[in-house]
Amino acid sequence: MKLQSDFALLDVKRGRKALDKMMPPGSQPLSKRDRIPVIIRGFISHRHGADDGISIEFGVDVTSVEVTD
Figure 1 (tube, rainbow, N blue to C red):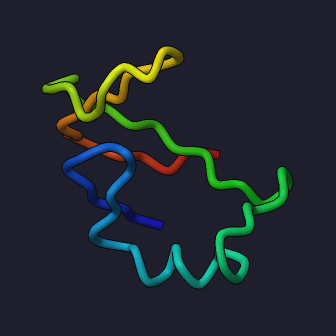
Figure 2: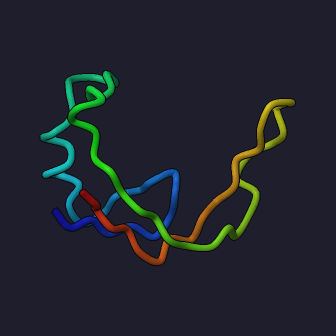
C-alpha cells in the first residue's frame, strides 16, 4: 500500500480510499491485529492548538509516509 501526506494529524491523500475500506464503520478503531504500522517523517512546523493543561498540538510538515511490516 502506498500513502502520501503532507501534514500530520495524518492527512492521507493518495491511498485514502483503500485505507478507508480497511476501517471499521464509524470511528471504531482497528483491532490490534489489523492495525497498519507506518513511519512518518517530517518537520514540526507550527503550533496547531492551545495548551489545554495536558498537551499542545503541533503541525508537522510530512515529507514521507512509509507503510512497514
